[in-house]
Image (tube, rainbow, N blue to C red; front, side, top):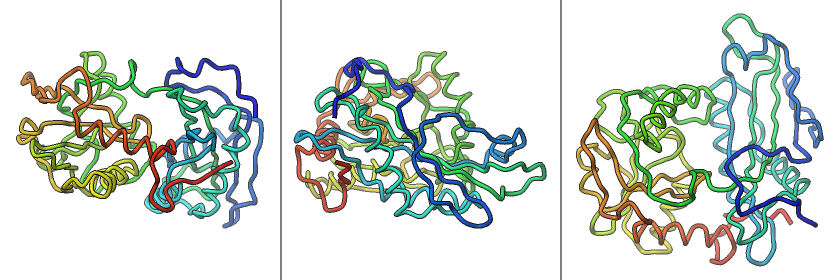
Length: 341
């Protein structure tokens, strides 16, 4: 298929309308057959539950062109599982996992001309989401819902590509211990908007959120999990019930253990031990891994030994191996790569 005339290598991380999107409606206790449409507009009641009470969940994954020219996605079954968990937590109907993967497949295939070519550094971002669509004025779950999938070609998540970030220890809380931090709900991200705007205005790339109960333990940023490397090359990731279970983080842990032979620890990470780590990165679908060069804790600057100019050596091996798997240069574990065409 002939690709669209897009400057792939200079794409930012923004929305570009593609030709097709998938839509399925839930009414009278069941999802309809669903299918692809061309119209990108969503028409709902002014009193729709999503507008009044933020009853919405979403996912994010990418489609890639591999070295041998195939279009693939990475572990979409895990995105399907996570959306099910998110929907259940917000009293929304479950969209079946097999239908989720099929919807993603249909949408990517229909928009194949927008999947960036191999080696461009760009990808096709896929956004499945679900929301309460009927009018609700009392505080209760909606009765009708819509599940949709759209795609958009994107470049690097952070401006300037892969370079070490400066982050700050944030005074705002991201999630409560028994709240919704472990699901991918729109309301969690709305809560983080003021904090990230404030961080950017003060010259920081991101926030480091601490646990709300003690404010002593590292949790995550507004949109990514933390990954640390000790001076003896042990990979450490924070463990908490209010952290989103990142698919990228789980994949990196497997890569660290099975591909690179590294020791991995998933445990509570205390703020006062951060200065002892050799490397730090933020991991998630959008950026895979973004290295962190400096953490600022209320005026105290913590410089990671890996520096402000490039990824640390272990972080780079993790990044290169995982992206190699995604792009088809390295053999993937069974079930990780879902071929579109």
